[in-house]
Length: 64
Image 1 (cartoon, rainbow, N blue to C red):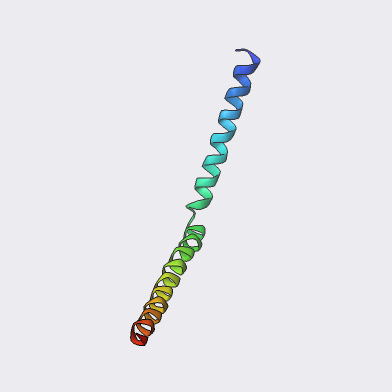
Image 2: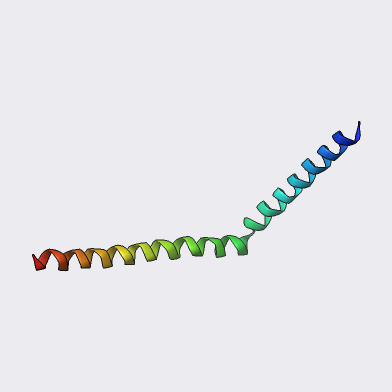
């Protein structure tokens, strides 16, 4: 193997190992729960904002 092939193989293996670490860290139990919290927080904010918009629309319609 020439140096370019060894370098390419090394970079490929390094990137694969970094990917494995990211996946393992993301799907670890503690991190999974913390990651899901943001999703549910955004969903709750969306529901609150929709209710506020509906209330504003109701007021706007009543003023006509």
